[in-house]
Image 1: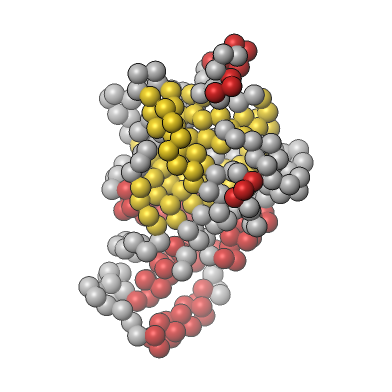
Image 2 (image 1 turned 180 degrees about the horizontal axis):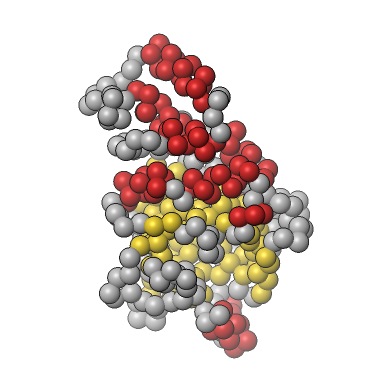
Amino acid sequence: MTLFGFLLFHKKASGADGVTPPGFLPPVKGQVACMKDLIGELHKLSFFGIMEKIYSFRMVDIGLNYKKYNHPYDHYIFENFFPKELAKKLSNNFLEYENGDWFFYNNPIENKKTISDWNKFPKETYETFQYLCSVEFISIIKHITGVENIYPDYGLHGGGWHIHGKGGNLNVHKDYSIHPKLSLQRKFNLIIYLSEDWDIQWGGGLELWSHNSQENKPLKLEKVVDCLYNRAILFDTTQNSWHGLPNYIQCPQQKFRKSMAVYYLTDLEDDIEKRPRALFAPRKEQESNQEILKIIEKRSKL
């Protein structure tokens, strides 16, 4: 069952206050009846209306829908994040790779295209980003992480749609620490993979690296979160959270790594490492290349 599907059923199976009684599990017939009633109701609503109805209560248990990991830094992995039909619509919403509306980062430390302009998003994508920035969804993140002061970035600075084609890559990096417009600290990244029929042998998995505290650079690769369709990862960006796609993606020409990204902010901490831009690390073969080191320095100060 998807995260959203679980909450849909959980809402109906709950008591009047939205909290499931301890040990309560409705019988199968009751579950079917609940779902029939809900389907009748939900057919009348827009996507946003459905989300509003599903999340109009305080979530108390989504333990079956995600797993938390602490190494090399706190992160949470969700399978089947969106309902099946919605995930397919969102994947199909992406513009063609050659469309001129994409912003193309194409240099020795990154090859990717992005769009963060809300006016470019089709209806389903627009509504989804709106929901992922909503009070209701942020309350879920608060419940999962235990962090109370979380704010959305409605401007999708650095987020939105991301797409990589054959040869796409992104050097390992730490994200900006202070939002350039809002003077808030970046706290969590939410990334949802939306490439149907993706073969993990093509690469595209998000690499998580440990931290070399003496030199402030990545230490070693600790984990790869494979690019599985409709999988999401939420991770804390305040724990020296080096991540990236340093290996060139080897997909066929007409296949693309698609993802949606939303970033969440929090109040500034006193001992924060101040980075207005991402801090990149060179690949091993780039470490002595002075031109690339200059690009990295320039990229971190733009």
